[in-house]
Image (cartoon, rainbow, N blue to C red; front, side, top):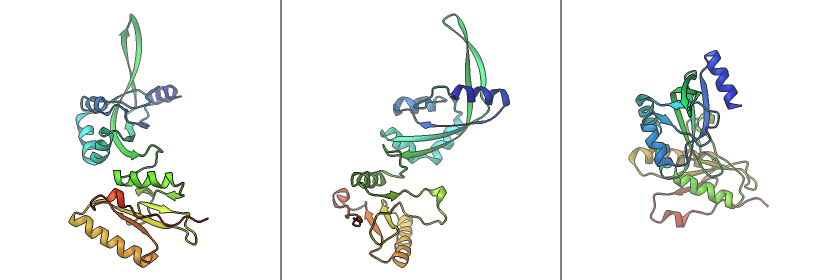
Length: 219
């Protein structure tokens, strides 16, 4: 199917969007990306993806956190836009072989957990893992789905008597972040009451060993 779509895009001069995990071997994958080649984890039928220095630098500026997570061994999904693919011919083992290739014009990255739930940090991944271990029902709001500028990291949907319980993971203590945290706290206290939402201060010493219990699950 991928080969058919690449052929159609090439013949009709259509740009393409490829979606896949970045290559599992991040050390080799990052070096290849620096050298101008983008390697994905499941590239069967994809054209060879060429990355210019400008596109690589743009990706680094916009998705440094996701690149760091990838290099630390975490799963990262790439959404890649390319120019219309072209076909070049190469002699391999005495045969002329068509090689599809495409110039990458944009890369967006998203870190995900082993269950493919998007997270913005390792702290969020810890909470996601615990929620799943406890078989909790929850929503992970995404930035492009949010109707407002302020939205929680997770939303519990299985608490008795409550349609939803916002969950916040506070992972930094910079001046700007603290001001944002204070604004969120005021908003949640006003809308849900001090006991109507959950939070974890991951900046505290030994924070992972003192994660507050989640609100009780409905029977």
